[in-house]
Length: 131
Image (cartoon, rainbow, N blue to C red; front, top):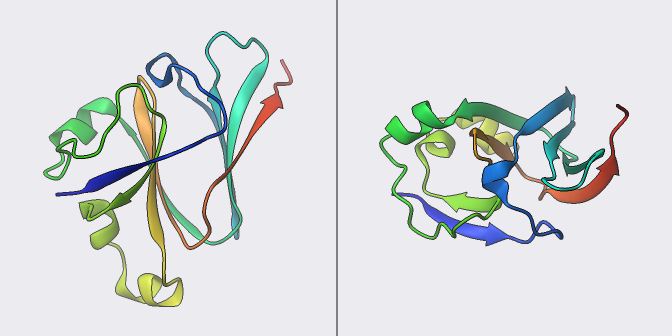
């Protein structure tokens, strides 16, 4: 069973009113923008500056995964480091050896989540949206 460890994203918001806006995935860099409810034309950007494995899920497949018992989940919290998940455990042994020690991070919104495996920790920033 996984254990969730909340991460401070530097800004408080109702993650269940948020959603993923965009993902930019390049070699050794990942950034993802999430809606900041109540902050028009602004988003929370999550960055990883290293190799990553990424999974995007809506709530239904996540709720049917065998390891989704909520140990350590905090109500309406957005960002977590996760230990003991099926997602992390079932990745390529070669990738896990090359990028050891990689951690599993999960970002939860009202419509789904983004899972990331990376040796680098996430960085967060509030950005202006080009609308």
